Length: 83
Image (tube, rainbow, N blue to C red; front, top):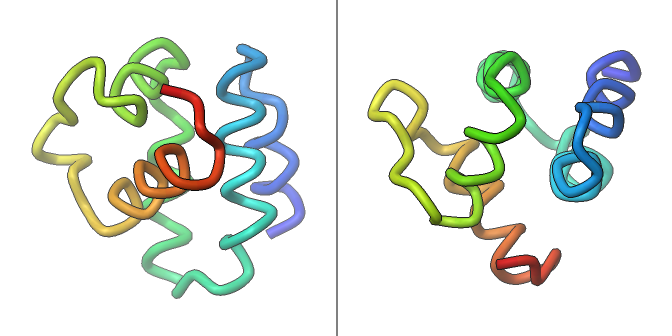
């Protein structure tokens, strides 16, 4: 979990470091093992794509449109306030 939290804080772009790092700080410990796997898979996507998806600038691809993506999008809209 520590490795994944570190990775979420050091993604490449400052915006994603804030968004995904903040999400990890708040929610990572409470995710199920399957959700952790989905979160880790999201972090493998490109920074630009992730930012555009979580800020609703572009639609999320169906294969990545799952519960963890919904949690991150809600976090971005309600808690991170970057849109």
